[in-house]
Length: 81
Image 1: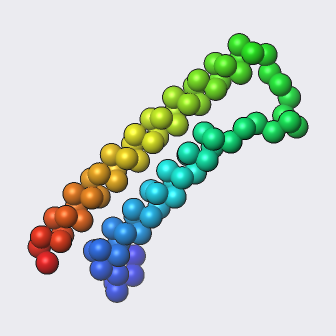
Image 2 (image 1 turned 180 degrees about the vertical axis):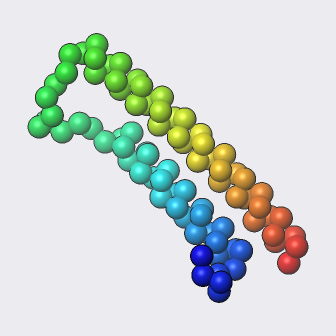
């Protein structure tokens, strides 16, 4: 962390990283498997898909909570200025 960065810049960089991660998760959820991949049995693919969706939902929830915490921190910093 360069000494020249302000708290606001550090927070903004952290928020940007979290937003990028959230976009990546959403893109993965929206992407469809390619035709090149072997087609697993329906039961196996359904189970794996449900597990992946569950993991992505947990990750999204975590990122949203982190963004809320950063929001509160930004408001706190704004009131101090």
